[in-house]
Amino acid sequence: QVQLAESGGDSVQVGGSLTISCTLSGPTYSLECMTWFRQAPGKDREAVAAVDNFRRTTVADSLKDRFTVSQDTTKKFLYLQMNRLKPEDSAMYYCAARSFIYSTGACLVETGYNFWGQGTQVTVSS
Image (cartoon, rainbow, N blue to C red):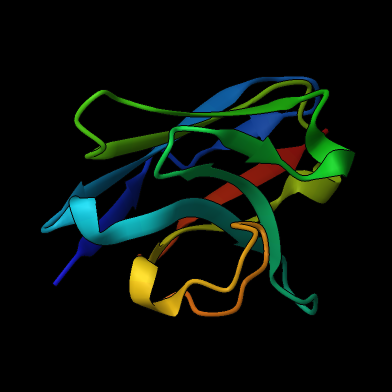
């Protein structure tokens, strides 16, 4: 069983930067995708950025110029670096992972994610 725990959420000012982390435990070798999602109050959850089992990274088109996703060499830590933060970036950020057996294609497609963390809150204020 894979477990995920996010950390690093904070309140930051507009234009600031923040890096949040996800710690994974368990058989990470079984994972196809490790992905950041976010959900703001009253809005649908959306995929933010992902790393696949080949260490290829993908960031949502609307965030590519400001967000970067990375992973450590052990595949036990996933990071999301967020720059030039805006109020609309305020959300609960979730780390999620999808096993190979539930593969449905692109990691930024939410279908099939079978492991989720509890989330970490990011608030951006002016």
